[in-house]
Structure formats: structure tokens, C-alpha cells
Image 1 (spheres, rainbow, N blue to C red):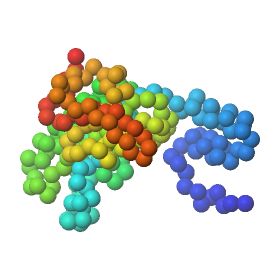
Image 2 (cartoon, helix red, strand yellow):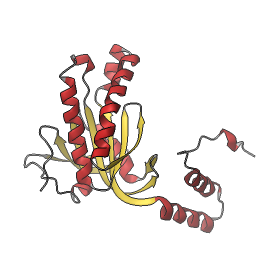
Image 3 (cartoon, rainbow, N blue to C red):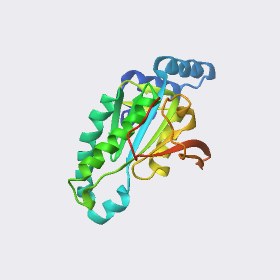
Image 4 (cartoon, one colour):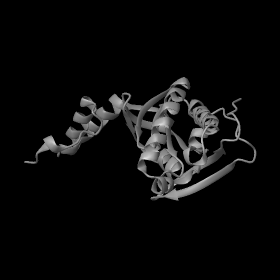
Length: 217
């Protein structure tokens, strides 16, 4: 028998982790399906996923050292957290230079992305180039497993992660078309509507550079 005491819990939420463990270990198909439905009934919800990434983190970290960027991560987290909450978002976690947040409405997530980069632009005025910080942000909407205020899982999480970490450049917000369909944000006429395929996932999204305050109808 395997030593399960060495297995790292997924989230630290006892109920969620126990249900996932039961689902993983269940050999009976019908019982496994019942457990899966229980997981979704208990933790499933619909909403907006916001994932940000510090632009140019890897290249600059290699040049200036990890301690330099740990300093920037700390400073950036102090800026991001209050802005997420001020826009009715739920800050779930930070992981290195990434931020993971959940919003009920896409509008609030889009506005938060603009507000965060505006605050960083203002803070950057006080620092030299090596100490300036910019974020790239990915936003998607859909059904996810939201585990309290600690984590989330689902297709929108995967998509937002790929947008924010792989496709967006500094001070850009990339928003999926399915999120834009539920938003009142006034997309600029010349905004780029893009399509990308990453790891066999096709994503349709809008590119929103942070050039002005977010506008809503």
C-alpha cells in the first residue's frame, strides 16, 4: 500500500482535497462519477479568471540576480492586492511573479488589470529602468472549481494562464472572446482580435494595451 502521508494536498482545503482523493482512488465508475458530480455541486461556479505575470521576469532575473527580482515581486504584490479587492475581486494566491484572482464579472477583472498597470506606471516613475515593473494579464470567463479563497481549477484557468504568461507582453491585457461577450467594456475600434493555438487549445481573444483608463458603457 502506498504511503499517502507523503502526498502533498492540492489546496489545503480538507473537504476539497478529500473529495479529489476519493475520486482518484475510486475504482467503480458509477461511484467515481457520483463523486465527480459532488465535487462540481459543492465547488463549481461561474465567473472570471484573472492571471497576471511580471513581464521580462526570466531574462532580467538572470542578468541582475534572483534577490533583485524577489524585491520587485514583494513590491508588486503590495500594489496588486488592494487593487484586486477594490474591484470586487477575490485574491486567491501569489505564486512567484504570478497573481491568481477571481471576479464575478469580466468588467471588474478588466478594470483591475488597467488599474494595476496604471499604479505600476506611476510607481515606476520613482525608479530606474532595472527596478521598473510591468504586468501582462490574461482574463477568461467560464465554469471553474473555486476552492474557497485559496485556489481555482478549470478550463478558464488554463486559458487565462496561457494568455497572461505566454502571449501577453508588458502592460497588455488579453481577454477571451467569451469573456468579452459578457462585458460592457468599450473595445477600441482598432483593438486586435486574435486567435492562437497553444498545446492543442485554440483561443480567441482581444488584445487590450494599457494606454488609457478602462472605459465601460
